[in-house]
Image 1 (tube, rainbow, N blue to C red):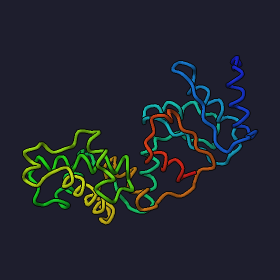
Image 2: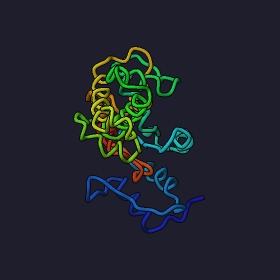
Image 3: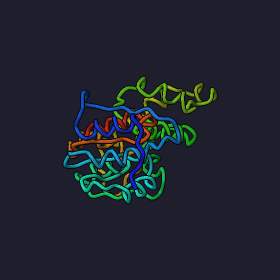
Amino acid sequence: MSKNWSTQQNEIFSWFRGERAESNLVVRARAGTGKTTTIVEAIRYAPEGRILLAAFNKMIAEEVNSRLANPAAEAKTLHAVGFAAVRRYANVRIDSVNGRRADDLAKAAAPAAPPAILTLIANLHTKAREIVPLAVEPADVRDLAIEFDLVPDEEWSSEGFDLFYVCDAAVRAMQIAEDTKPVNGIDFADMIYLPIRKRWLTPIYDLVVVDEAQDMTIAQLMIARGVC
């Protein structure tokens, strides 16, 4: 049974068919208006040879894959897209021990830091890999440290382990993560960080469609653009 599509939905379908006044399309829709249903239907009409639907999480990707009628399309999370890019250059797996590499990298960047400061460095450098992967200076991650409350207490600052120390160590840990070839496992932050930082992204999709695009970080946007 055919659906009764709205005027706006039919305009979206026209764009997907190739009737494109602009190279990119942004659709604003409120909750409950059938965003995913519209995306799945729209992709049916897309003529591109290989299409990525970037889903918000793995469960949604699996559910959407079962609904896609276009054989040229596949649904994946952007983390999965990044992981695939890493796997093209290194035979690695996902590290099941959450944060293990982050702790190791923090210690390598700041071997003299006490455990409480190492925790801040590890958490900040993980956030930075996911959100500001191109950071190279302490100032590049300072706002991130403040936003996620990764600022040392005054007692640590008085001993030299201040906010600058944490930010400086975090960007040094990021550099170590870039320079050290992943031999065994990588964490979820590396799935976003390594493809961007090491320029491992290649344009393998003719069309990239992002569900819930408003929740993307700049790093995730770089992944989506890098494979398109």
